[in-house]
Image (spheres, rainbow, N blue to C red):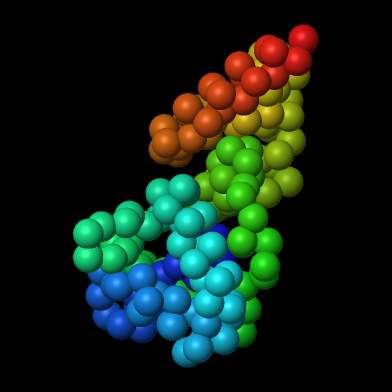
Length: 153
């Protein structure tokens, strides 16, 4: 997942699991020239929302093992990383990261959605759980999507 790669890069570069926010921003904007400083700050917000980063009193802490992430030499993150992703997109990324083909996962989720009459977000969470993938952090987001949809009826 490219968001995980972009987040891991500054920690790998510094050989640390904790960085000050300005170190993270400098690593992404000046050292790697992947984002502007404002975009790097936006990336912090998104990564925090998605549970990849934790804000602490002394800066940022990575919430996964950055050493397990490989940064391809030609890696150039897309600006799409800077937009908030839906629960469906996040679950789909988790499924793909576990080795599932994206088109197969989408098809299975769509089938489940039709069978159970769920929102796409809820169907994605149910499917991932059935596949043994931990997406518990996304269950509340999917649940909220269900309640938002009920109000539209």
